[in-house]
Image 1 (tube, chains in turn yellow, orange):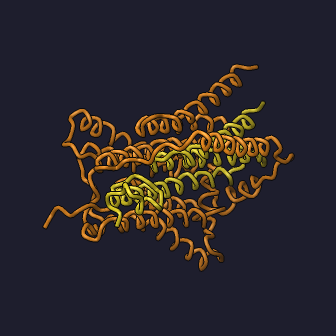
Image 2 (cartoon, rainbow over the protein chains, first blue to last red; image 1 turned 120 degrees about the vertical axis):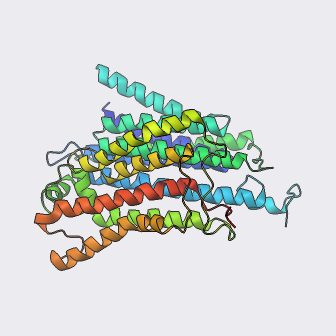
Image 3 (spheres, helix red, strand yellow; image 1 turned 180 degrees about the vertical axis):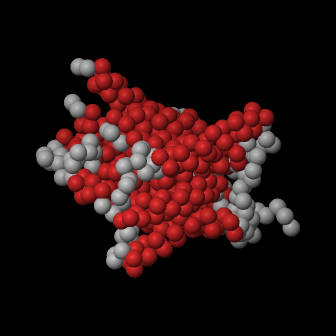
Length: 112
Length: 317
């Protein structure tokens, strides 16, 4: 098994793990962490496309690699925005939940 | 099996193990520490894929800065009273989710094993770009980012600014124009101060070197800018400096400098070289380095502002 196939399979496993965490974790920041795991798995699969596309005297295809670099920075920017939204939401509601019905539930102290 | 392939398999198992830990860890802090370690391990895989530029970005942004972002967020959440998370889901739901996740992972794995052969490649085009319009750039990644796909790179800088605007907009009306909350509530802590004073000058030097070397060797504006951003954050964590107010003129100018210079150079290319984002061949390398220098400035300003969060209440009357 070549390193690139192995890395691609790791990427597939990471997407699966991230998806599991994203759906199951009740904590919004843990969901965000799991989502980043999915993202890096996708980057890794794209990375082996870059490795396989080696041509023209290069050991890799620079176009997908450059796009992954751009992608990592954009993923970080989106994560920072998500963190800001999560923090403001929980500061407003005093509850750490993404459940849209949480406002109306009887145990919600600040059901307005 | 050679030694290198054994190491590959071990690295793959380690990464999947650490990823399981970040999902399964009991508390947020443990999960974030796992994620930082995971980012650094992933950088090794990128090196094995002959992608040192991606490895540098993954280690700096994917592991480092995202880790700081999540730890800071966890601390701020911990400071909120009554912030109780929802209950854990039921077992049947867990099993169903696990089956779905396994299905998706297997589908992607199958796709990886069945990739077309011979693989499609844009490498010849990119190599032509490295020798053509981006003349004098030895690093094909930088040539792609700054010449072959320059429009993407410019828009990506715009995305960073949009994210900063988004984060700032989440603050309360009263706080507008104030500074973001400090990274640490506590007063300065002597070992942290020493660490910051020792590390920051070295880190700034390495950051500038990464940017400068990026024209010909692995490195570039992203990696250098991310390192400078990290150094600014280290000094803010040691409380040697405080986050600047969001209406500071110098801050806003440095945020827009990168995309603005990039756009001006692109428009000038329309007049001088005949097409949008084309550089005159004799001046290509100096122009690209000029644009990259301003991009480093914008990245170094934007990343810490994204981590610092929205402005908090004004302290001055």
